[in-house]
Structures are given as structure tokens and as C-alpha cells.
Image (cartoon, rainbow, N blue to C red; front, top):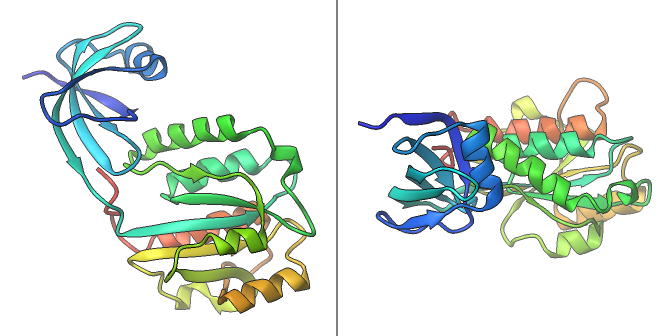
Length: 244
């Protein structure tokens, strides 16, 4: 029986049903051939980033590798986390995106706030997607983090799904240890920029139904608060249903 090539976890935009063959794009072919060093006959795992998980058998390796789908199952996420975050200090946006993706966050929405915007990070969409893909491979998840363009808070709130649970990272809120994270549905975390939300922005969040939650016994940087909130959400289940 052919061996599995480990660790090999591909992102393929369209996965056919069992028995179908496909030619991989350059990036995935390079990852398969040069990074994972697979051989014909070996098996690898792939996702489309939207819930499909497939077992592939390598037919040909090279600049445009060819694989055959042995099995493919598709699933919908029973729970999702969305992170709305103000800009951190310096160049920490890359780190934030990478770690949110590892923790299984579904949507990262940068927020331009009165006390800090994402101007320095504009033009990084392609880089952030590459970081999200690398994190998906490392964590072996079947859902890819969606990274959106920055919006002001009011615009971002208008685009939230109905029925979601809303939480505001706030040192004066209820301690996270006493608040069970939701086990299903969409949960939204709002984290202010390095200098914090303005009183007007806090009022908008409170009117929208955001409940304050304290994530530490001390003051956190913006990027640390985002990761602490995502960890609180992610740890609510022992093994997330979107994991292979």
C-alpha cells in the first residue's frame, strides 16, 4: 500500500469528487514536490479552505503535479469566530493574522478607529493571505481565514451576521474564566487599537450589543488581546469540528 506523505496538507481551490484527477497550480506543486518531496503513489491531504477535506494520491510530480482524489468529504462549520480588531503598534499585524488563522478564526476584519488606523498595513492583502495559508497547513484545518480590507467600525458592524454573539475585549468586563465560550453559531470579538476605542466607538459597540469580557489580570497589547480572545473561543471544544 502506498505510504502517506507527511506532513503534507494542500490548499486546492476546487476539489472534485472521488476518482477525479486535477493538475495542481504552481504554488501547490512546488510545495508538494520541493517542500514535502512526495513521490508518485504517495498520499497527501488537501482542503479547499471552505470545508472540503480530501485524500489525494500523487500521480505525477514536477512543476505541475497531477493528483487523483481517493476520497472527499465536505462539511459546514458549526461554529465560527470573527475578529474585529483595531491596529496594533508597529508591524505586529502579520503576527496577528498568522496566529488568528492557527486558532481557527473564520474572518479577520481590520477596523480603522479614531485612535489608530491600518494605513501602514494597507497593500498587505496578498502577504496576509499567504500567512493564512501557511497557518492552515500548519494547523491542518479545513477552513481558511478570510482577511478583509479595513473598515470603520460602523460599516463593519452593519455587515455582521444576524444572531451572532458579540464580545468586547475590556479589562473592566467579566473575567473570561467565568464566561463559557459559545459552542456553536457565530461569535464576534471586538478589540480596540493600541490606544483603545474612543468613547464614541465604545458607545456604538454597546448599542450594538457587545458585552465586555476581561481576558487577563493586566493590560494587554492589541494583538495579544486579539489572540487571547481567539484562544478563549477556540478552547471551548476539545477538538474543533473543522479539523481533519
